[in-house]
Length: 513
Image (cartoon, rainbow, N blue to C red; front, side):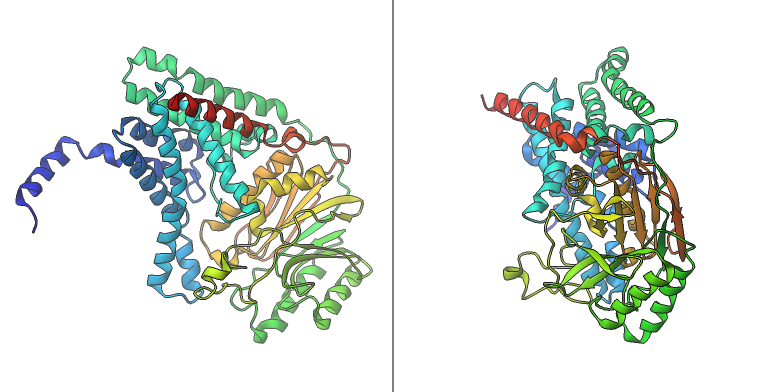
């Protein structure tokens, strides 16, 4: 039975604002959502961690801090991953199941925010003066862990704080030194510092002075970025590339009734691409296996007729079912192949198949696939060492860094974002390539079935693009430089993260001792 006295006490609490502090973590969710594509107000991200940080410092128990982190993470992921629902509905999944899928994924990923909140609560025990620095170090370490765990397990590292800054070219140049994690650290530090200052209720003058570290960090990033970007990008325009964007309906792709229509559309784009050295097809362009004689002969004929190399995205039987890219030379011969290394969980394979296989099947039309080896030979196209990456692989910095260390001069990302329909997901997917280009100081060409196709230079500037759902060919001449040195991040790896790890360990030991 409902207690009337409890009801009467609720409304005065609401009016007097005693419930207001519990809603502060949700403000973090709102600010981060507004920072992402769809709104693209990336400047808000520098404030976003302040409400959650204040909540952590104000929490009387670790459970309260944990609850705030879970709430912030859940509503944030619910907001930026909203496209999961229309994607599943378009695939014929029932509304209730589609909604449940989105809710479960948001709940699962909110554990990232919960872990960071628990860590932040532990930092209170050490006095709190260094809270912003150590909390930001813990956050960066968490982001690195959720990406790197995919080498052996599975997570969905779609979001990092640093990604919110993708439109601010000067600010993102630091990732060539630290990887994306250094920029995430800076964004988190600024928000945590503001949250800590509000919690301490300092006088206005003291607060202004205490904000100096945040101002210096943002100013320093901007000045470094200005100095790092040359007025003229050194390099050679030695390759003419044509990026195909056919905008083929995803759900007609594997229907044999549409095969001839799809072939005619692709052939028209290839033959209408001018006189490029290289034609880049999107992921899984062929409406069948490349080993089928019909499709193999067709692609070879197009290469001979156009006199251009073809990078063709296709599924392959190979030594097992693979998501692949094939290099067909101008003579029509297959020169090289690349097999996708990190597959999409539940889309291209089922994690924990022994446990979940009875209940879940992959949603890919052609069934379950196998990953390729982490280190595969680079392709050489007109003397340029080229590293292909497929779709979801663009969110993993370690793949790009490994290929760049082995001499890659150009990255080609092919994808099929038709799953996501007309949502913010294709823009979210595009932006991660901006950071891979800056991290490695190598250009990235991106061919997407329905967009957004783009040419991104080594400084993260989108030089050319073909918008979502457009049909056409994007002709580009990427500037590559065989003598270009490796970026600091490529050559030295995650030194910044190691430093963050030592900082976190030192303060946790201080708390325990």
